[in-house]
Image (tube, rainbow, N blue to C red; front, top):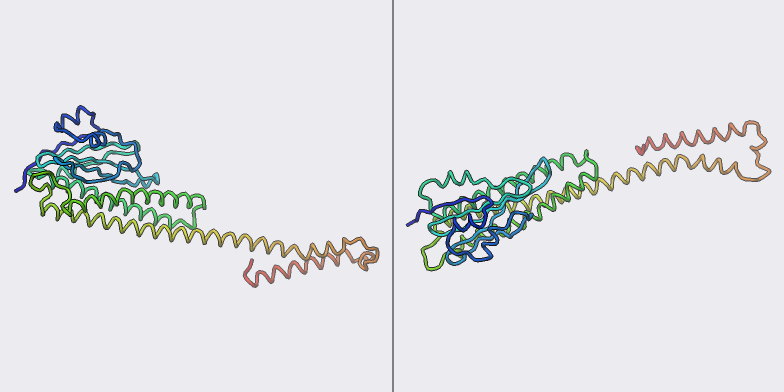
Length: 304
């Protein structure tokens, strides 16, 4: 038999507002976590755990801002008993707070606390899936322009994407582990009926599958980023080889004229062409012929 719960949602509450919304005692660490402003990138660590008379959850959802090439995090903390649900949403300094209006719409009527928690967790899981899709779009854009953008831009985008993936994994993995704790019946209240009965645990299994798909999507994104990085490095190496080849060709073209000029610049009295009236023209003819031959030969081989 399910018990109907009362849900209170707070946005950036003060301590007085929090104590009025949840009059029973809270663990000092839980109270500190609930009141702490959202000033971190990916802290505190997501979790779902039992505190004896109530369950406590901290959830983070990464949001990709494609226009600015950045990721920020939305935090929602949850307190649960059989009769009460309290959510505390925190506004990040560089983005908007998590919107739970869709969850509120789904939880209209007689909804037990465990199902309310499931809908919130499912919304978080959907956020991770959307984030993975956004990251894949970022990688697709990078792949499309890896030959067009300058090297500094590509290196910066690759570094930012890898950094974002590391932070996302640090939030996704503990979120998935917390949902797994619910499925394994390890988050329950003391001496009371189950907070998460079997049918609710089945729903949490669906959310767990979404988080698992998000984890697999992150692994795929990491492999794709590695492929783009390897292609970019090979492209940079090929470009450097092209530059070195052209410099070598220029040096080769100027080598015969340098030899001819050096030959007739020797300080010897008896050089036949010195007293020849056509000697100057002859030296120029040798220079032009050898240079033209080299250019023809290099073009024939496809080096120019």
